[in-house]
Length: 194
Image (cartoon, rainbow, N blue to C red; front, top):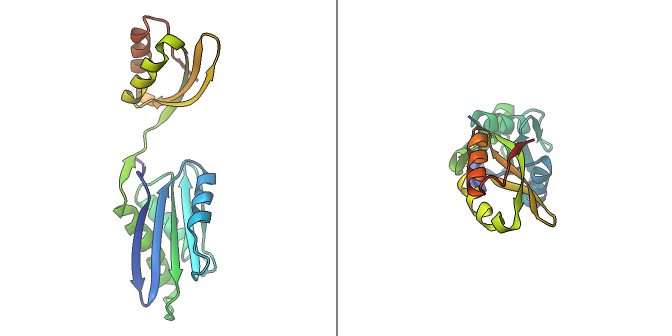
């Protein structure tokens, strides 16, 4: 079972006079991860090391630290906390005392893990895509009910008779939502999996 963060998280720690700040946030795409990193990196800091994971895609950076001592331990912390669709940035201000490669790996990985542990987590639910056409007369009522079924509207296109909705719903709910939509609309709305 994979988790993501419900919102941003932060953890601060000082290790042998070096200050570490770990920042984490949920993401839906690599572009969101990059936007988070661009917005939160501190160019005045010694190092801005990071990792993100979004499904099968992942990336990490040591940002000038010895190879394998920062980015990879941050990614290992993400995976060790059963997280997906998250980005973690660990900012370091050098305090004048060398930590060594093992010390760096423990500091970066530990800060990332503690940041993720301290954040509010939510379970990732596998979703599937579906579509349906909703007449204008039913649109407001159907929109109100979709949230009750944990269904999100990904896209809507209007035509003369109503709206074509592209939906994302929990994979185990397809038949239930299909039946509910048909019942509410007296058979007018048909849900089709994509």
